[in-house]
Length: 569
Image (cartoon, rainbow, N blue to C red; front, side, top):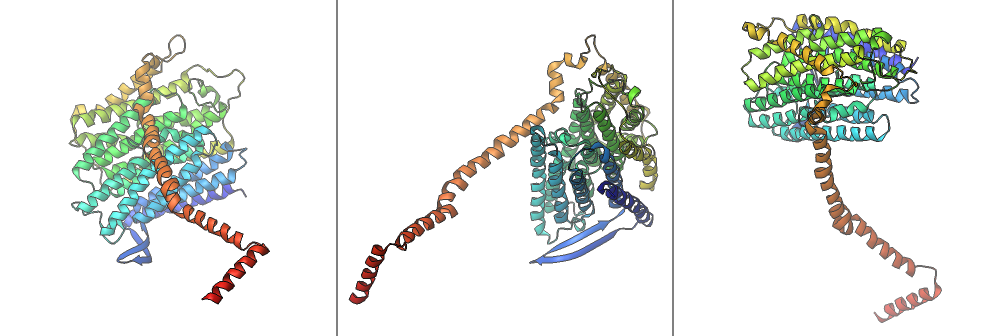
């Protein structure tokens, strides 16, 4: 029995078990807190704690379900890889780190899961060993280290309380100590969920194998920051909420705009993830943490399947990822194309797919909030841009001309890939309606004027028209978007964030590190510290070795000297 099948069966069983357990907890309105004391440090207890409630259990169920399908899909996608078992074990470690993060009400054990996600994601991003993967892995690791440091500082600051179980203190909103902790938590969540100004690593992480991208961008790494913010959603004061709302709306707008000018298939879907993360964060900072969690779950399903379909296209097009080479895929890969179209419609919020129930409710809830006009317009324009880049992507893939090599063999993927995708298509269609009944015991009351009620439909149809217009080819198969070269470069380069991130990390911290190494570690500390001590010991050893070497004359002279010394004194 292969390792793939073992973990597929285990994850699928855990998924169904935790799903039904979450229903039990939800019906009884029940939560379970388990704590085991490891040791105490003065008055501070070091505990291992787990918190089971409806939210953590259903999230674990979704993570296990998506992971099982990804592991099954990997059997075909990674076929021929000599280290397939190592790849599967890395994916399992990734899932276990996410479980540790989901179940922990303790910031120290959260840090273990958080660091585990960062470390294993680095190993998976550099899985294909080339210079591009190494650069992307380093950018990912260093960006996430900023969040790790923020968590470490919040751990140090929580020594003021005597415990690291944030559940005990999460409602003390007016406490100045908790305000500082909430700022650190927000910084950590922004680095992990790639909000501005830490957005550059998310498209760079596309250097990982596609099954990893499917797992990372749906339910594990990037959603960890959103989940942590949902848990800490009671801690934030008004100023922090306004700042977070502005940054998340800007992230949503920047990612949606950039995806309209991108030609790499995986990067378009990565920017789509970034846009949806901005949507979750913006509704979270508006006070709708349960809505953010609802969209987090429904988004995880169709985004995982979207990446799986993209992997199948890339596999069939001989590892080409440029959408300008693809076209007429509907004729050659009908089943995968149908899955891809359903996921894209769900992403756009087409009734009555899973994405519709969360996106429509979020848009109307946002219209009811008292937000300024800038954030409101930015939010709805970004929603329209989602439809725009989705229509553009489908135009290139399915309706454009096939610009691929004439010596091609484009066909559906293997059985494992197809069955892995088949397992996800049913939840993509029905999960939104099921979750909307399960999660909200009382429905949201929406009261809006007619023009605001139609605002969502208006931006969707506007985005549809813009997407079709952006997609059109001119006579020489040259995209019209490239007629505005400067604006196109600026948007596709994510407003210069990759340049700022790489230069910011290389110029300031790494240059400062090199200065410290040359001045201190290899300078005076080297001379006065361990190396200098070692050199002095070596000199003394050489002189003693000369004295005690097997030379009879020297020995007799030393003997006469010592005898004379003893006689005289």
